[in-house]
Amino acid sequence: MKQSKQLSALAVNTRRTSVGHRIMLFVFAFLLFVLIVFPFYWIILSSFKNFLEIFEVPVRFLPKRLNFTNYVEVFTEYHIGTYLMNSVVITLITVALTTTISTMASFSLTRLQFKGSRGFVKFLQMSQMFPVVVILVPLYLMCTKMGLVGTKGSLILPYVAIQIPVSVILLSTYFVDIPKEMEEAAMIDGCSLFQLFSKIMLPLATSGIVAVSIYTFIQVWQEFLIASSFVRKSIHYTLTVGLSTFKGEFINWGGMMATSVIIAIPAMILFTASQDFFINRLAGGVKE
Image (cartoon, rainbow, N blue to C red; front, top):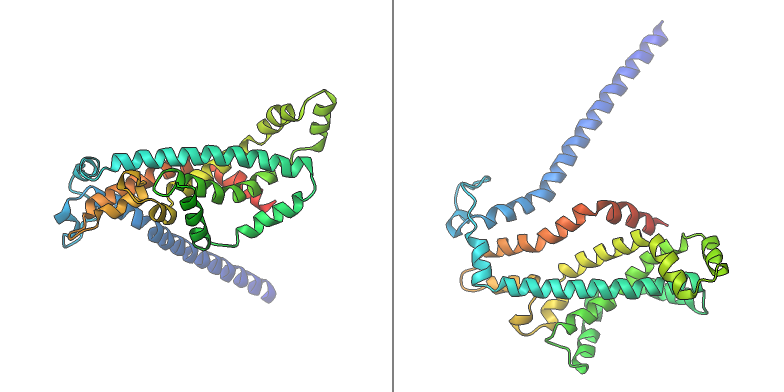
């Protein structure tokens, strides 16, 4: 009897402890959510305020009205439309080149098994140890000798060079998982190497190709260091570099916030619409 009472008391204490842990976990998760989401909310809110409302005291956490003046102003006075077009062109070309080259390279490294393929993969993996700032000067000197500095090519070429190694590493995991029997059956049926690649391997690796394309798009779309170092004329600025045009004696905070929203929207929409590819399959590829 005494033992049963002790067991029941222990069970009650365990439930209380479990409930307490859940409450603490919920509070911590909520605070973390607020810390992460609030800056984005504040940027969006400020983009709909005029100059005086941004510095208004007490602070308003809900807008009086939606004022689109900042969005109109950034396109009419700060040439954001030009910067937006530059970002779109540079990003799409980089994604196309990176995905095409990485797909063919991954197929070659994983399915053809030529001499030195394993060593090359290890070299690509080692290259990811170095931050972009380490190779910034060599890239700049290379683009200078090629006469590309100050043009869109001075951004596209470094972006492709930087994104290819990680794209090859990620795509290789998808090609490795394709059963060898399918390749052998296709070769027996008379498929050439190109037909094997285009008709058998590509459809089976579609999820990996999409994931790599999304990853490359997000990385290039929001890149600032190379874009600010290699571009000299404002006509070639990307959106991220275009944020620097709001500096002056008086910073146009409303316009800067509006431009930040314009920068964030495409990446957020693409990421949200492609969560299955970007989270589940890309993360699965990294684990494997």
